[in-house]
Length: 287
Length: 323
Image (tube, rainbow over all chains, first blue to last red; front, side, top):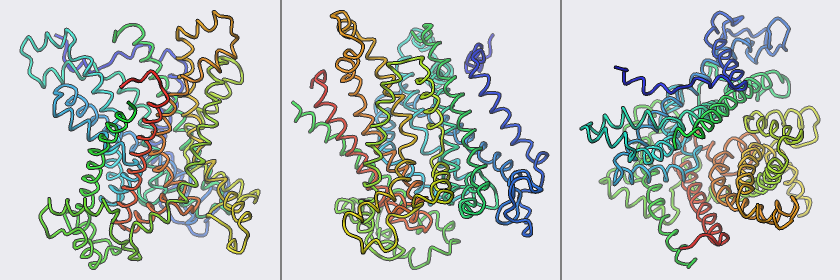
């Protein structure tokens, strides 16, 4: 018998057939490898303070220059990549799980469960997200894990709405009815039949979600409310760069370029995922 | 009929506002003087006195439902208490910051939609041309651009390297002595960079949405009818497709308000623009809970009524909607 967990493995054959998907996936893989290999690639210890060598431009003995404390910018950016990419991915993984759970509960049970969850989503959508994030961050205190938790707690609503809509359209289909008729419990119907079939739009929103989460983390760290120095994130490197913007352009140009390139790659991958699922649903899979 | 719809739509906002009041109450309840006290006790900026003030302010010695009702009564009067920092009433601080926020965000809305909509129409009308591909590529970059980095780059370029634009603040030193026109010009000059940054990403979003909307409209039957009676592309596009393609944008304007208000935290902080976003940031870095919740609540109110206004406008303009 086919193991049930395979129901969750969406058929992605053909996804890499598009040039855009191949290139953006390759680029992101490269970035991830750079981040993982930071301890071996970094020319110096990212936290090593070397005051005589402060604010040196790119080239002069260090690839991308040094910051106001003489720390090596390239090394800090490599280590910062681990934080920024890691926080973004982890936050999206968490928010997607919460969203799937909430959306499935609402769509499957309907009635008051649905009303409570939908109302909660409506309320969360009314408060400007960034204010809510600020309030929660102040409550929990800044720091890497807290940023992940806060992003997940404020970002699950879109996934939940998508999954709820999918589940509502699936729940009266024959295969669900026959599972019920065969005596499957509610949780079995949800976890083995509904969720695996409701994941299509989730992949799309998760892919774009990573871009959003990275932007929010770097933004928060830039504002001094996210990842705290000396741990480097692309956001707090930029903030330190801002303080020396008139004398050391490299401290703002390079970390920002890193964020921009990452955004372009992630959004491009998201776009490929969307086109892939759009073209598949045209083939009548959902019809 | 529109009156009945308006009343029904207003009724929906009641549970929303109640929900927002519960959420803000919950966050304030968890603030110092409660479970997270051990965390904040370490924070030197949170003095014992301000913790006591907070406890008394929100009546934390009383039962929970009484506390909530008291909070609700205060919200109804826009009474969020006093700021920890300077003891001024929060509502005064928010009201001082509101004009600057509106001065930044209303032109941003006009800019975002005024540029995004024509771009979207163009992309839909001329697919596959060189200009269209260039525009699509450009909006993809604009969409991916981190606003705070764009702000820094513009400060570097316009302020530091070229030295032509003021890189921060609301007005120049000594502008108090200027005449009313010069004062306006001075503020407008300071508005340039924040405005570009806060509307930049929205062009991409608006134009993409508009393009899809136009493409969808062009596939409708009545468009074929319009062609069949001999109209040219231009007439079909502008007279027949446009009105229907523009309608969904009204909802988008409503939805954009919340995003803009929240997003202006970063833009206002970087450009030292004295609006609600910067107030929120100052409150967050100074653990000034009453101010932070006051700003969040006012932001939510603006969002709720922005959406309400958009829905009503949509209902009034779209004759297909019947109640």
